[in-house]
Length: 87
Image 1 (cartoon, rainbow, N blue to C red):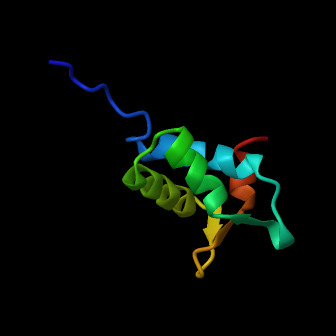
Image 2 (spheres, rainbow, N blue to C red; image 1 turned 90 degrees about the horizontal axis):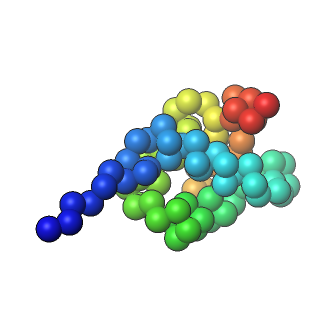
């Protein structure tokens, strides 16, 4: 019997940092907006995070003040604290 190893993004801090890497890779559009699908798709499809891991990471990034989530749910904006992660 094979046991699964620990999931890399089960830690919400690691998931949030990976989300921030995806957000940084996207060139923001009008007024610094980053479309939510530009961080969701690579996180789930390429990094193989579960939707729950992605959501926990996103909530952690918002809670840390790294991202600002728009009420429409269509985009986020990187705040100064999030930019400082890569300085």
